[in-house]
Length: 433
Image 1 (tube, rainbow, N blue to C red):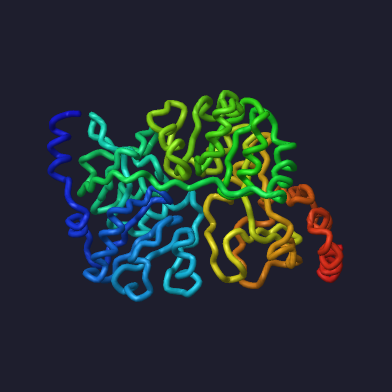
Image 2 (image 1 turned 90 degrees about the vertical axis):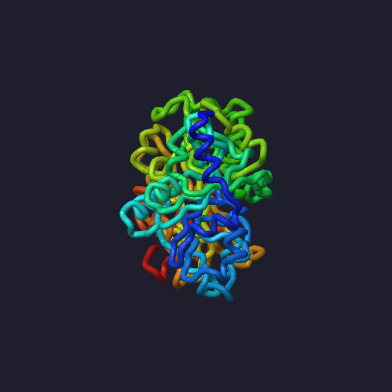
């Protein structure tokens, strides 16, 4: 490491409590996705939150419930959800946490165009290399755009954060404050897979070709698909999230990235969520590149991969194919994320396939997830014009190029048998049949 960079590093190193002096009243603090969030910094902010007024923390998918996520102190520090998680969903439902509707791919442009003003960045970072660079490898997402626009970039440097390739590097000259920590990066285990998820996975994997490039969303059903792809050959990865399911496909040899037609030989992602084994795999791995989300999720770029496959879950779908993937009626549950980005990429790709997956029922088979019309107030995530393959445990419906009548019949055909009669009658009343 250059002595000059080390001197600058030492000058900018400080305790987390001291780093809070770099934050001003009214600031907007941008925090990365998931395990990219810096726990030492956010804990210090929580402890000092009553010293501030009008500060906002914006983030996709927080994984810990920090003390600042508190309805009693929202005038001091308030959370703005780019995507709800377990820590913030209750506040969203109660109305004291607001949310920002946006396609994941477009968030960097919101920041650069100052439609979303960013004053400060809190982020996890790898140790500095000999050239004075840190890697924001765990969540590059919209954070690189925020770094370019913020007044104060404050990094939590942790030796457990991998240093990766890609457009994810921040130079010491861009940093206002450095706080060190050593705790292991938070691990997120694979979801449990049941019989329903297994059945859905089988329908999907049956029509995924060798040589396909995959985007795999988070959840039990996408992971069930991954577990059944181990016999495939020369798969590639161009995704938003890299997790342990993808790591398993690499280890068994199903993923080689050789047949990719865009960035052949390279695996591309924008954030990581998984085990310590995954994070170690990422470190200086020449096969992997971590890039901002306006690169990974750009439908035009991802579609340059032939046989682009997207696999994403939804909560409810109506007989025309409209998907609600982020709310229960008007009550927010998650967010738009990158689902639409990759559905559109797969639709544009030569021989691409976009899958929307869901169990046919919810609440112990008492309600159908395939419905005549979405619940009033539901947030439409993926439009009827974008949806192609819809898969439940009862089969696969292919919708693009199909009429409203054909769509209704196809979706009724993969609904739970107990609901097919009432769905048919509702379709007749809607003049779809």
